[in-house]
Image: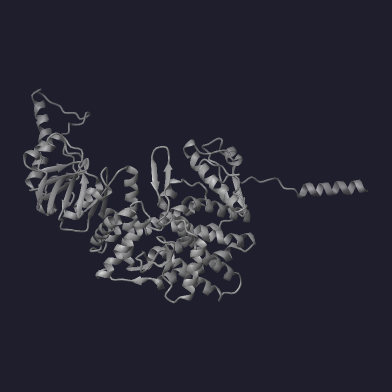
Length: 604
């Protein structure tokens, strides 16, 4: 009967149903598929918008306040670090920016813009259903061709010639062009080149650049009061009574470095000493004094004129050394002690016993000198000329901090130039030339690969385009002129953006040079980052077990962070809304639920 068949169908349907299997913790958010991939690309574009305007000599600065301190910078790596990016895929951009900063020092903004522009050019292919692996494979091949083209374009030089020294000076000036101290590059560029060239005398000197070159910051005074010490300089340490009586100037002194505490130490409170006569207590006190006096006598007996220690040198020792015409300083920072050891040839001692002349160092001159409101100990004329110290002056702490970051970038650029001994022209010339080469190569590729390589070539043009936009020029006109010059003129390969006049110029002749490794590393890192992000097809976000409201907060889109990041998050969210509005909603795909751009902003 019909009723019976209906019953059997219902039983079969019930048998076919399976109970739901829960594998993930409640509140876990998972997003997958094409929409998730496009969502990740959109998130990366928002991050790029935060640093886009900092590129080039006319780039703007960003002010980032975290509640405790204010940072003003246009250094891409610094800004990316301070933004506290929370989006899991967008963190890849932070990583490549940090990698570029550690490896090359400069180009941290360029590498982020290149990676994001590659993703932006690939988004239409993703939307049209091209498999991500095909896109990634062609990106890698295009990247390899681009890196090889940069190597072919690179111009080698010999640093021992006058022309080579001029090239180092130009690379340092180019690195400082986009920094806060760009107007003072005539002062800082020679200082930077001198400091790095002194390191190149040793085979391993360039590898320990941060340890060998000290940067000291003294607020106050004019920025042009900054100077370079061919040797070691460090700020006067905490001192006791008797310090002013010490000799503050020596010629050819003998220097003793210690990791020993020269203070009178009482016996530990839990030490047990049994005496039969109260007068015997005096012998215990005398023994404690004798310990410190033996240490001080050993320091004087070895013939040292200057005694430096990582650990405290007390008031007794300070007066003792002052009476005998010695100079001493305790609590010297570890980095300064190491630089003094390298410069003077001294060996750090962990005991005052058995000190002999071979462990003492020497230098041409030692002097305690007033610099602004601070007093500095200067060691110059050192036998080992590898180490140097740059003393930076400036009106505000933020200015000096940004100056230090700028100096570090320029030091790394000159170091990279010395290592690679080859340079390329800046100003977007290399990117346009590599893009032209890739377009020509794309004509020999059949199938989808041709379109992907062409899109990669177009992505490279973001660097000259952004340089124009940041300087207030018409990027379409200038890019058209550059493409025509590079395609039609045999000598046009070094033409880039003329920031001064708003046209195009031979940037190699103009002296805008960068280390070839800088460009190679940027292109390779950007392609790798784009490949990593395109290879992600699912994001799983687990709620924090310590936070009871994490599940509801993440799923509902409520703010997960504190008030400290609220304004920054709103700024980033506003950037996303503005871009979407400006492009008429051209971006497709939304961030998955629970995926936030920054701390303090939920997804949804």
